[in-house]
Length: 405
Image (tube, rainbow, N blue to C red; front, top):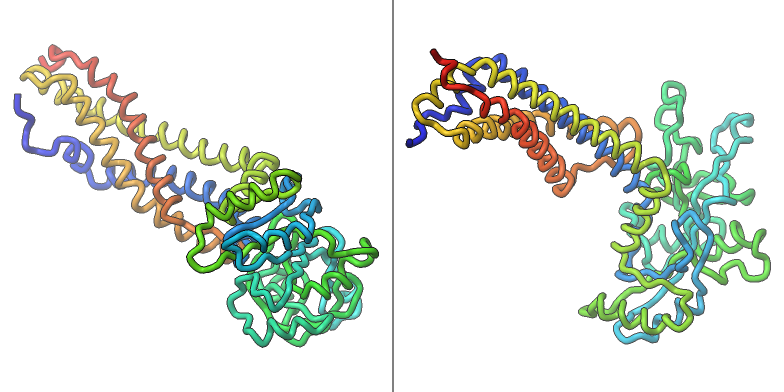
């Protein structure tokens, strides 16, 4: 029998507009729950890879034993220099990162407050090598880093916890160009600001020249050769060079020693995220939050569909009595599930996006709704509602045409 031209699934759901709105809001709640949990999880992972993404290089060299940037294992500068001998490599430079030994003194005018220091991530680079993408820092300000005891500061450092009394201040105080403070117990002058943000390891970052890094940060702990090893080797390629071919050539060059791991920048980002995902509670805690939102949404959607089927049992029985099959009636229920998915996702994702903006402003975490993340939340919503629809279909199949009489 030819199906009726009336869109039955749509009519079933929308004949009562208020009720349909409540149905959509229930699905939207689950979308927000999944989206926000997923967003916080990704923001935390992203915050730990901002430095890697700011590197101006196609290929990076690290110590194979370096599980995360937090760890000290380095790669020999001699090995980094050897990379320049590979065809297609324009240059290779060391990047030094220190998490544990350096502290930045508070910049407040109050002498009592100035006694406090907080740990800061110090990034040491050759100011003339153009290794970091720091928008807002001019070429002249980069050159000024060649003067020992100068530094660039992170405007996106963790905010002071008492913003009511210290508006706009970071946990390091008021950071501004020209400010003089102390880094690792030595006088330092702040040249200019950039935005990178804090992560699990530090409250903020400063960028200094490799010379300042050597004398201010590393020399007290490695007096013989403070820059013998770099945390990351950044390899720049010649225009038109194939990154994959050069990566393979570098792997072949360093394979005999096994002391250098060659990765693309994106691979290092994935590696770093994988460390935080598997070795910290991030993956479990927020993955469980996404799963909880999925289950809550399934329950809500199933209750909606089961209630709708129960309310229309006589109508379904009538359709069966005049010849419509279980397959057609099941498709009607699945259509209702998909309509609910779309109707709930639209407002849910808007609320999720607004929540991202609010949380980014309040916490400083980079909560970004990328197309891939948008697509994943949409897919979870569709699967959630479709699974609920499949569960509710059993009620339609049990309808007896005799119930109409």
